[in-house]
Image (cartoon, rainbow, N blue to C red):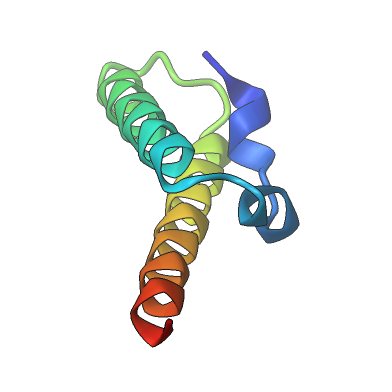
Length: 74
């Protein structure tokens, strides 16, 4: 899948629009689900990827909530 997306840092996410963040979140959730199925089936080689994707999801959700808070402050 898209392993490069799992290494996004907060600085990379700051410039993205809310639509881009939503699309990224959906993609990461799908990737996380696929990894869980692979883990259950014994096919996942690098189990650390699950943690990376989970943390990237948290970063994306944090950026989304910060954008909402910034819009509310205006």
